[in-house]
Length: 135
Image (tube, rainbow, N blue to C red; front, top):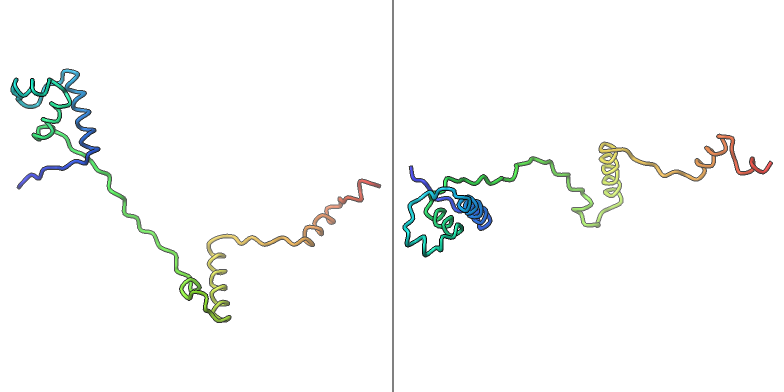
């Protein structure tokens, strides 16, 4: 079984190198044998040493990438009025309007517009009015 080399994004690479360089700067052991000449060429820089380790594949690291969740969502039906483009007969408009009214009634509550007469009747039944205060 062949082991494929894992490629990292530039953000993952930066995170890995930064974490490993911090470990090296806090006296963590180097995971590979690096010659003294190479170390002097790298100026004993922990970031450069971490980069050499990452490129050689000796860092025991794996990256878990979150994958988008698969969601199943039922899409709303396309209304006939949207498909027809406005060139409908009165009968078709009436059918579409009735269907939309039914859909609205099934999905939630329909609020009615309050008539002024209804409001006035409620006010008179309560027994209070503007004329009561003057008498």
